[in-house]
Structures are given as structure tokens and as C-alpha cells.
Length: 585
Image (cartoon, rainbow, N blue to C red; front, side):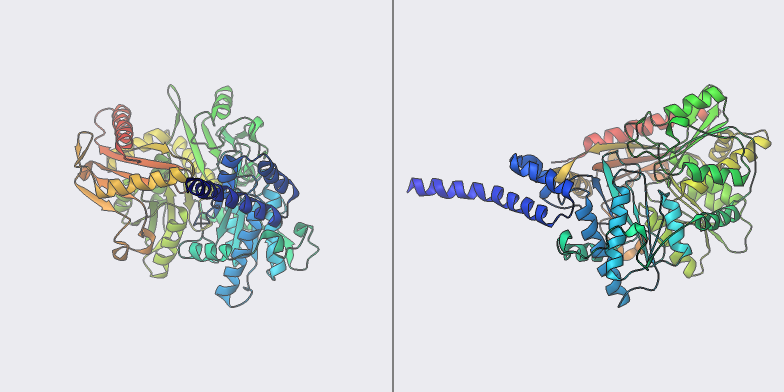
């Protein structure tokens, strides 16, 4: 009897391994790419069960940011098979929604990562075989330009193959809807269901070598698209102010370089100096470990060049050019502006120069500084807060414009995302860089500076500082532990954080029926600290992190910079303290 029990247990223990190997072999058989078939087969042959679990247990989840992940073989990695199945799902969704092939084309663009062009070509090939018309950028292109093309061409959808500022090993697939904004719920859920219903990649019809343009329904986009983009960018500038300021610029090996250089040339800023070692697109990102302008060290080459050139300003884009970082000159060197500081400076600048008859509307994500709301009140502008992500900012703006509330003039999120006017229905680091150069040039001409302007805003609207602390939890277990931490905080909110009393709690997981759709259900907990600030806790939408945000307000006093430094120190300590108190298990 004991022998039979032992045999049953052995069979039970073997079953998960057998299922895993079966899943891996099934994926190999359905993968049209020889390299990734071989990669996964090697893992099967080596019986590397741990790595096979990471590759094959679960899939990359399609959401409102599309899909993004490490490149490699298997359903939980970015590869051709995943892109082909994702595109089939997208195409099936679009056809079902329209009751046939939509009238507008699908616009496709890609960044400079090693796999991006192939993934984009596969995307075009699947959609061509399904009957769609395709307009594509034949060379690497910034995400904002692809988003603009989607609007300009009344596209039925757009796809950008990019991992933005993620590590070099990653790639991604971002989808824009027929309104030229990023998809929002429930569209993402419906597309995800269509992807799940898709057959294996090898069985999906696909036009080979789609970018050779032998198919009648595909056409490359030329310089005319950039010219149209420039015309709208120039018209949206609040106060065009050409200058000879020395402005050091880096795209951090991304795709924005030649476009920023051309926009600055046409905009009359003749002193732009690109960082030579980072000016050309290179998906290997050889000079940085993490191509995110927010990360320590990413702007070291730019700051070194700025010192050599005695520059007046440093601006930087992330690799797909939808974000903007700014470093300004101060008495004792250089000061990197936070995303919120750039946001309130640009928001104030846009509102100060708004002259249209319609009421201006400005927007920021919920984790961005409340200070923009104070500035909007000063100008009698409409201010709206949305969930995190430009998809919500833009869709809120479109909805409120349709209701006649006002005109969308500016939106921002603290993670270095900004859009000026209605040129691009997403964040745009190219036009934001130009407008910030205009802002700086105007202040310089009046004998002032960016920091002095910031101090005046603090004096008028209150000193606001923002700090973050992130806790990384990778893998499926990590995602689950992050969810548990948010659940525990929501169920057991503290009465104090640090030495501050919690005056109220907003749990964005519930009560969505009482809020506009751009403030729908979200795993976000807000601890209110009265008039003195707030704490927010939420998972990152693109990285395996739980993020803690702290916004504090205070008085400027006699020394604005000293007050800002002290308040920021307090906010930073508070964010770390809240992170330490979270329950992940």
C-alpha cells in the first residue's frame, strides 16, 4: 500500500514538470522565428525548469500601456510570436468593432532597439493579410510623431514598437485608438480577450517583408508628416522667443535627435548643442546603464558638455522622445528640475499667454503635484485631475471639450510627461523642449531666470515639494505581494504618518460610480494630510514596483531655496518611512 502511495505522489510531483515541458514545446512549434525556437529548445534540452517557468508560466499581459517586457523566447517575453498574436488580436478587435475593415489606415512606427523594426514589420504583415491599409515610418521615429500621424491621418489605430525608457533588454508594443490617444478601458480588456483567442503565431496569415511595400495597401510616410507636425507645434507655442542661448541636448541614444535639432532650427534657437556620444539612435545604449533621464548618471555626459560650453540650459529626451528632462544653471552649478517643477512652470507659462475666447483647461495625473490646481485657480482656468497615464489626461480633455467646458491647453504627469495644446494626444518631449526653450529665453531677456520664476510661483501659490520612494518586487510573486500591500493599506490605514495626522483616506479601488471615468477604479490609496499635503501609494503601471508619493506644502519664508530644500528632505524621509511600513506578505 505504501508503495502505491509513493508512486501516486511521484506522479503528482511529475505532472507540473510535464505540463511545463508540454507548454514550452507547444510554443516552440507555434513560433515562426528560428532563433527564438532554438533559444527555448535549448532550455528544454537542458531541463532548466526555473528559467522555463519564468518564460512559459503566464504571458505578457496586454493592458492600457500595451505590452512591454524583456526580449526573449516564450510567451512571457517580447518576441515575434507574441507580437504576431498580439497584432492578430488587435486586428480582430478593430474589425469586430467596426463591423468590417475600418476606413482609416493603421499607422506604425518603431524605435531603435535591435528587435523593433522586425516587430513593426510583423505588425504590418499581419494587418495587411487581414485587409487593413498601413501607413508606416520607414526609419526610426519618435513616439509623438507617430501619435501625431494617427491624428493627422484619421487612423483607425496606431502601433509604436518601443520600450521607451526601459532597460536595454526590453521592448514593447504601444497602441493608440481611433481618437489618436492611447487606449483606455474597456478597450484594453477586449483586445486582450481577442489576443487570448488568437491561434498560434505560425498559423496566423502574414505578409512577409511587409516594409518592402510590394503590397498595394501599404505606403511609407515621408517628410511631409514632420512638416505638418511642425506647423501645428509652431502655432501652439505660447510666445515664440528665438534665442542664441547655448542649450545642450541629449536624446540618450534615442530617436528624437534629428527632430529636436530641426524643431529648434525652425523655431529660431540657434545655440543647440547635441551631446556627440549620445546623438545617434542606438538601441544598445552604450553610455548609460538605464536610458531614463530620471535615473542617476543618465545626464552625466550632457552636464559635462554643458560645463565645457558654458551652456545656459540642458534639455533631454528619453529614447522615444515623449518625455522631457530639464537641468538649469544656478550660481553654484546645475540643478535638475523635478517633473512637477517643469510641469508647473510650463502650465503657468501656457496659461499666462493664453488669449483665446474659450476657457483654458489644464490637466495633471493624480500623482502629480496639486500646485497646478492653485495656478489654474489664479487664471480662472479649469483644472482636472486624472488617473496616472496620458491616456486618461487626453481622454478627459476630449470629453470635457465635447461638453463645452473649455479648451485643452496643457497636460502633464510628474514622470516628465508634457503636452502643449492639441498637437499630439499624448505626451510630447519634442514640442515641450522647444516651449521650455522659449520660456527660458523670455525670462533671460528680462534679466530673470527659471529658478527665479519658480520662486515667484511658490510665493504666489505656496511652496510645494514632491518626493517618491519605490519598492521593487519582481515576477509573479512580486506582483502579488504588491497587490497585498495595497490591500492591507486600504483595509488598515494609519492614523498618522511620521509626525503628521492623517485627516482622510481615499481608496480609489472603490467608489468609481461616483467619479468621472478618468478617475475610475485603480489600486491607489490616498492618505490626506489636511492642508499640508498627502501621501499616495500605488503599483507602477510599467515596472515591477510599488510607488509611494508624498506631496507637502509649506511657506517660502525669507529664503525660498532653503525652505524648499528642508521641506523636500522632510517629504523624502516621509516617503521612505511609509514604504518601510507597508505589509508585503
